[in-house]
Length: 565
Image (cartoon, rainbow, N blue to C red; front, side):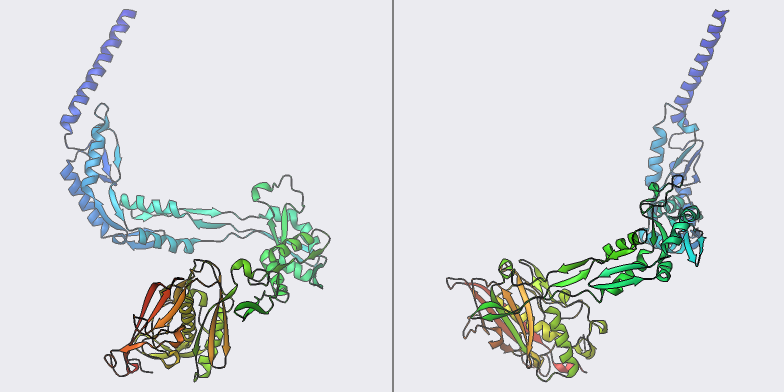
């Protein structure tokens, strides 16, 4: 009996093995250059198709798909805006190779799905994701406690939601790869930090917190925060990450919850602090026998520590009802005791320009702009940008409309006249021997900037005036107005060089300050009435008298007639 069973088992096993061999042998013959019995590419059924037939079918399907509209997150869009191209040849080739790799299995008779090689317009995907992010975003709202008289009412929470960017991006790519017409984006619920159950447990303590005033001490003054104000600030929030707050073992102590809205507390503290804060004021310098002297001593400033004040008030409402403002001192950058350590030991250079005849708005802008540069420190090796240091130029920063030169006209704009400031800074940098990285002449000659060729026009964001502090020490800029002249004084440590200026490369008639130079003028009238080209040179000599640098500055001025106003 056992022998008969064994013979039957061996016969069945042999039959199965023979069938397996037949299938394995027939697979490469029957399916040569042909897909299996249940194969698809990008959702397109290519079963039993040859490679050429599959390519034609896929090309047709994607061509038709690309002309259609699909819905992405509720927005109807053109597929062509997102699908850039399909590499059908590569897709079919790799899919066939993958199926042929399973000759010793039943790979041609099992379900096979392949993703096509597609190119996606990533910019358009990013745009629709950003649009949907803001369209679908719902900010969760914490449960809170509202105290009215002797009643504490719990306001329930609201669950929010947000779009999952990475997951949604992949959904779009996968959907287009499979010719999908409806693509839903991945939206995740956002749980609030405080639930109604948690707020209910804190309600009785919240009621107690707003029942008495809080005294805030600071700068010799006492401030009272009334119960009505405390009630308007009431907001229950976890003091620690929510994972550390357990409802089951809830004990209403300080470490579990804060009870005041930190944003509202900040606004209150900030309004008080503005009357307490004092800016630090740098020492004003002068020279005495060539050495730096302090003309006006520095003033130490102070500022209220807003973050500490908020924490103290949060603690006071569950403590002794008293908080104290922490007031920190602010040291000025330039002080009598740190001049030597910064290398500010002498007057390095001075640059000046004459703004006589300026109208009132222009004069105002010069004064406002020059004040912006007073007290600026330039670090050793720093590339200084005039525009960066200047900042915004508009009504909010104190400027008035005045004439400026634009592309083909002269028109009033906020800050007109600031080129008087930049030209003066340019001259101070030239006289100090600093490398000039960027400088632009005005479009046409302007009488305020004589001698011609020694001006520097600026306009936000470009053109700019840039130079490098290569003295090895700090440079302190101080500005002053004396009569109708604007001065830029650079304090620091002079380079061991001699600097001269001339209107020719041979240094004939060289002078020791750029304001005294007589530029060479040429091409007069070439570009219209009043046009010319001005050239001057800066010669730098080392301690032995050898010329080490010979910088040429060329200014091509057009005719003022080309810029009417």
